[in-house]
Length: 365
Length: 267
Image (cartoon, rainbow over all chains, first blue to last red; front, side, top):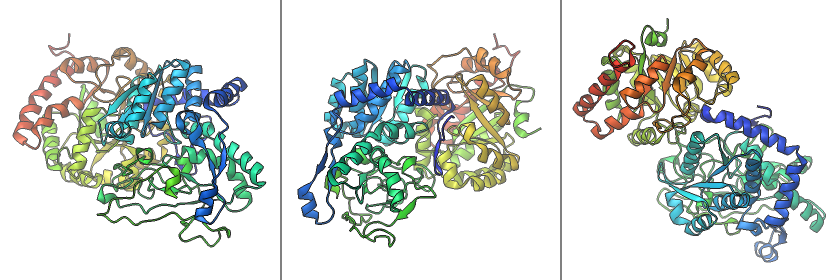
């Protein structure tokens, strides 16, 4: 390994030995691309001319008024081509795959956004694309399945395990183990073995770079808070990365969870990473590695919107020893500045009541 | 000589894999004793896990049956401890890192040693991250068994062989357990390359599902691992002990002669 595999105590490579040569090859190609100006130029051109970047930073005046607290700006990643931030990463990874001479693209998808983005990028470069998707997710997200199909990708229904995102990841990795020599696995979030978390953050950090410049232009100052939802954490790391250093200088950097409390694993329907209810909205979450049930096996996430039913967030989302852990906004930490926190509705699920559904970004405030 | 070294001494070793607790621990206890009595040389005992990345569908489903049946690592270790005086073949635990982290690595090493476990295989723990577990096991005289694959480079093979003990688990193909379709590198060529680097015994596994495959594997290696094929064979029996015995015994007896050189089956 040429770079650190770890973020604080988390990260690493927990995969079968067969994949190690592929991860070494990937790390080498990724690091080379980082210093290759022709790669950077080609990607920037794609992001501008194909994807439609930069995305606007929009002042949400009615939401600001309705909530009566902070001025709220929305970074409109939904206006990217294919409708989500996922394309930033997919274009980066598929461009890398093409340069590595890989013939075949593999991806997993939950709600289908990453699958659609990867299918789009693969079609753009004329590469074969196979997308693994849980059978239940296929049923729930039929329009995205149709889009992938139209883009020429083969969508494979995953029936093993719980038939959801984590099983789609497992099947994608099994495919990769079997076809490791000619295939490139495009992971959609800041998770998986090194170098994926690092690489996905690098391909997503354009969100924060733009947002930082845009808020400085509009407000002449940095925001008090940057808020993102977390499934695996790619859009969160994408926007946070550019703000972290400034936040340190202001002494206000920390992780805070804005979420419903995690249901106990025993009731069998919780978002499974024990301390991390990944189906909830957060100002980033405390993350620990996926040790969901007392025996270490994962149980299925409960989110009704598959987009957020990952069973773990990535290692970058984990608190390092130097990270300040802030209390949820319902009980602001004393050391926190004076700006009023945004309050998330926090219904307390009981073992009999259904969990509140996780909706898309804006509706979960 | 360690018990694992003995399993390979003077013969080709037959190694079986079962998911502990599939479908319940009593059945596993019965099967482990049966396999031992039938002359299996080394018993791999799988710790069921929800996301077994190195395994194919047969072992994943076996793991799910075991988890639904309430198997936990704690119960598995307790079972192995109880069985230790009754079984002569060495027991090797095979499980994924999450299960071990959840249990606590030191506690796992302690309790495995107390249960008479001879070695541990963790298919998703590449050797460059294995220092902590490897030394915990070594301190307790247990072997840390590492895997190599046909695409492992010579440089990495050397590094792995230095850390491994007991035997080297040679994954026969690029693929997952039970996957016999992917032919890949000729076995002999592969094991010759590994032998040029290490003197550890070599066991070949992944996709060995017939006496003929076992014969080919035994020609190339010092031991052969049979997992998915055995589990598929026994699965329909459920907890019916008589049925399990009826199916397991002829299967094992069909495999054993094909492993040994000089037997009529070796062409």
